[in-house]
Image (cartoon, rainbow, N blue to C red; front, top):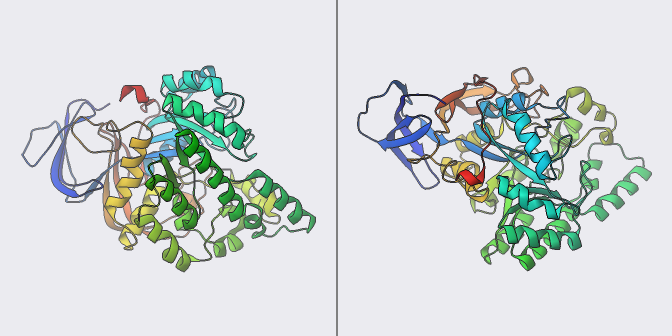
Length: 453
């Protein structure tokens, strides 16, 4: 943590509601004043009238450490997060061993703390077998739990019967469940039919992981969540019709939220047909082209159908993904995203598709509130951690594989020109990234527990 006083001058401080011109005083990593007065400090940073936004809280990352560090380790993953303006990365249970109990959780915290460049949270895993293990993990400070409705990534699915008892416990604990929604019976039948037909083309992927499979699973989870009153986040919602169903439930007073991901606003079926495994993830993109994204997805975004943005950062090495170039089935589901999420959303602001206030709401404020980290995280307020990003909205860059910080070394957005770069990224008053370069030290990042809020 930076010692002494740091003054960030000439800031345009952004919240979900407004933009305020002020100076930010930081002492020992905490914001102690937001004022227009001239204050003395040991160090000054001139924001030059640029936007200063709260660092993002990414509630959906798969860092794969321990056990699958050929994909990503916690240092490279949190370096990539720093470069992407993610100052709190919440990693999931999908490691070796997976985090389904307090012992595995304690081991993971100890293992990754010495590697972390940014602050981090952890989600416990959810399955039909570990309902009795949730309470101890929740008391230890996990930000929530992650479960699947389908057989994916080696996780046992929660079908509606098991989901009911699982969500009853989530409600009792006042916890939060992030749930991947695809109906297993639909995807299983689709897979069998497609393989019998000899389909190996890229677009067979969207027929396998169909919109119907997602719709059926989401509606089932909504019904069970309503029955139990549990707080649920529906992960990576791919279509505005599903977003509308979730918003309808939320408008009825239920704590049911839709998570969006930047790839649904930047990748389309034309790209899947062309790039295949490099843009293979699930649920897949649904829009045919960018025009359809602009006509359907962005209006839903701006109307509040989505409550928070997660990257679903799930990288694989090039040599693993390229196995799907001749047969799409041979590539795993997942793309890197933690270092491009905020940059893509800032580019959308510059394109006039949304506002900087909306980006702060969905990437900083709402995730911090839903996952129990607010106001320690997610806001630039007196008493909050000095996690922030100074934006340069005017500079353009081209996203290129050669600049990727993630261990995978590639991006699905290779060659995409964007406007708006992250000039300076700070975690608790310490600069961890500067204009695309990770400068933070492994071991600086801390485990962020809800109990500290």
